[in-house]
Every structure is written in structure tokens, then in C-alpha cells.
Length: 116
Image 1 (cartoon, rainbow, N blue to C red):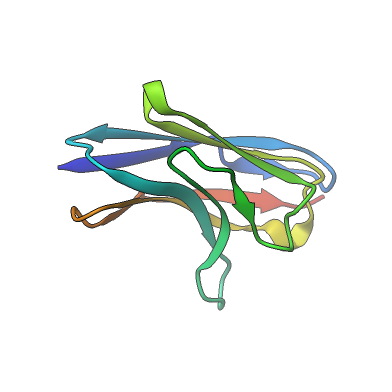
Image 2 (image 1 turned 120 degrees about the vertical axis):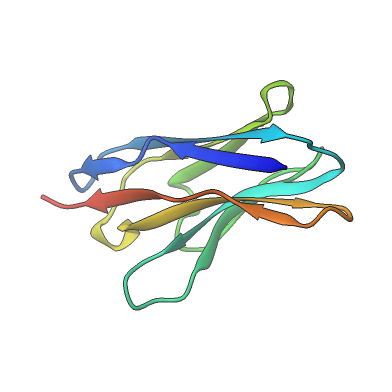
């Protein structure tokens, strides 16, 4: 059983920063990639950023230059540093881990609210 636990969400003013963390635990084998998705009310879940094992991160156009995804393989953790936050970044942020042959896993989500 694999668990993903996110943390770091909260309320921040426009222009501010937050850092999300996602720790994976359990029987982890053959990770394909890890990343972050977000879902705002009334919208579909969308990819924010993802990083393949041994690869470089890819970002949604809406967050390029503002968000930075990093990964600590030794800790099975991914981080999403979010700078210059905008009200349109408000959403529930979900961590995802995809594996080769063992399915995909999701965290429970962490709320990010960007508001003055």
C-alpha cells in the first residue's frame, strides 16, 4: 500500500509564496514520475508540474517562471515552490505518483487560497 501525504497549503496574499510537500510511503517500486495537479471549484483537475525519475520537471504554461518542482529521491518527497502567487492559483493541490505496473496514486489534497 502506498500513501501520499501533502502539506504546506494555506492562505496567502497575492504575490506571496508557499511551499508544498508530498511524502510517499509504503511499498514504492518503479516510480515513473511524481507531480502536482490542482482543481479549482467548477474546474477539471489540471496538471501543474511533474518530474520523471531521473528527468527534468515539466510545467503548465500558467505557472512557468513562478513555480519550481523538485524531488528528493532519498526521502521519496516532491516539493512545489510557488512564488508570485495569483488569485487564479487558488485550488486544491493534489500530489500524484505514477508507477510502472503498480498503478497511480493520489494524495488527499491541500488547499491553497490566494486572496487579499
